[in-house]
Image 1: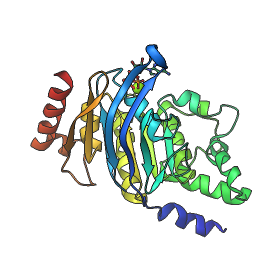
Image 2 (image 1 turned 90 degrees about the horizontal axis):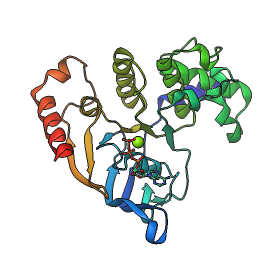
Image 3 (image 1 turned 180 degrees about the vertical axis):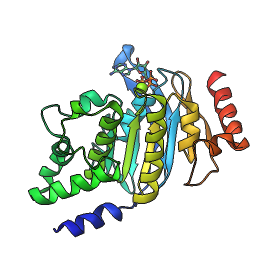
Image 4 (image 1 turned 120 degrees about the horizontal axis):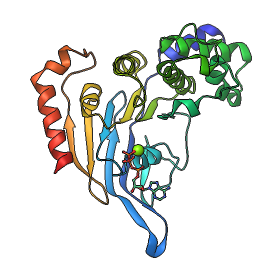
Length: 268
Ligand SMILES: Nc1ncnc2c1ncn2[C@@H]1O[C@H](COP(=O)(O)OP(=O)(O)OP(=O)(O)O)[C@@H](O)[C@H]1O
Ligand SMILES: [Mg+2]
C-alpha cells in the first residue's frame, strides 16, 4: 500500500456498524459469593454517534466499557458489533484508558508506540510510519513522533494514546474517564479533539465520565446508570449536533436542562 492510500484510510474511515449490548448482565465471582454489577442493560451506539455513560462511583461504568471492548465476557446477554456477536477484542473497537502513564511504552518513541500494533497486520515499515504520523497529525501532535512518551505532557500522552487507537483502525473509540488526570484547559482541548475526530473521521465514540458537563458537552446521548445492580435509569438526548463550542454550547438553556435532569437521576 502506498502512503496515499493510507491517507485515504484515515480520512475516509466511517463507522459502519452499531455497537450494542443486549440484555447484558455481569456478575463478578461465582456461586454464593457472586456479586451482580450490571442487570439487563440495553445500550446501543449508532455509527458516528457519541454516547457518554455516567453514574455514581462503583456503579459499573468501567465494567460496561470492558464488556463493550470485548475484554470481559457477559454473564448473560450479548455484545454485538453490527451483526456479529463479540467474543473478544476486535480491531474495529479500540480502547483509550485513563492512565496514560501506563498505556504507552516508555522505551519506545511515540511514533513506534502508535505504529507498533500495526506490525501484526502485515504492513510494511514505511507504511506503518506514514500511518502513525497521519494519526499523530490528526490528534494535533505533528512533532511528537520522535519523542519518548515521558518527554510529553499528560495531555499530549493522552493524545498519543488516542492516535494509537486510531492507527489500529478503530471505528469505535471507547474511553474510560479519559481526561480525568489533566488540567481544565487541556481537558477542554481534548474534548474538542474528540468532537473533531468524530466529525472528520466519522468514528463512533463512547466516553465514561464522572463529569456531567463533559458528558452533555460531548454526547449525542447520555446513558445514566444507577442502582445495585445497575440499570439504565435514563437516556438523555442532547440536541446540539456535531459542532459545539465550550462557551456558547454550555450557555444554551438545553445544556442546563440536560445537566439538571442527569444530576437529578444520579442523586435520586
Ligand atoms: N474484577 C473485579 N472483581 C470483583 N468485583 C469487581 C471487579 N471489578 C469491579 N468490581 C466491582 O464491581 C462494581 C463496579 O465496578 P466498576 O469499576 O465497573 O465501577 P465504576 O462505575 O467504573 O466506578 P468508578 O466510577 O469509581 O470508576 C464495584 O462494586 C467493584 O467493586
Ligand atoms: Mg470506572
